[in-house]
Image (cartoon, rainbow, N blue to C red; front, side, top):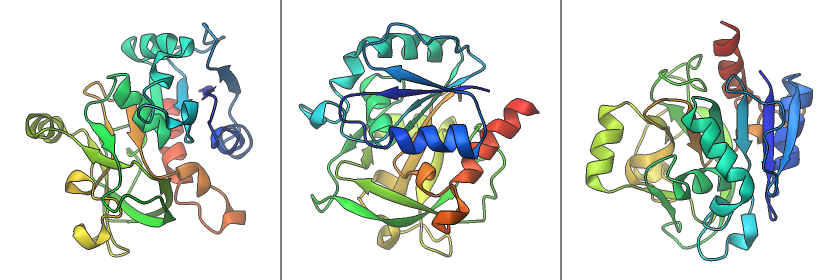
Length: 233
């Protein structure tokens, strides 16, 4: 599997993801500029990454302008053809604005930027990035966002649950899912979801910031390993 990392004006986690994909996971990695109109040699067997940051300064709404970047036409086409697309933080917001994922990311409940280590727990193995995860093991993954409160209308929530599209929920260190462990007020503690076809997935926490021993945390690496193990299998 190869990775393609999209860089928008205002992206600030692109180099982190490039490093993890290229150096840590030892995968071929392509850099995709927001004005590009081609995915280079990437195919539907490969994964497009939308990194965190503040694309276009978060003007209008987070991800609202990035959604109309030239490269996004190709990203949407890639997703519709069955290719993997993975959005992290601002990438999650862009995928919702692009309607590749349902719902929206709203301002945090306390209207403040949150930057901290956060526990989350996978709630399904039915996705490429959660396939290999232990559903009883909380993961400590950093978060850093001001608009990370996931929201979806009741009918959308019903569909998400019926289709097993919720991937991660915020929890405490023991795996308890409650209001006290919800950092931003996300509906039902949701931290990550996927689409119906299970090839587009996104999350607010940053697994790329928890993928090396030098950081004293490799919980995030498990998600990249899960994706690669599934492809190899």
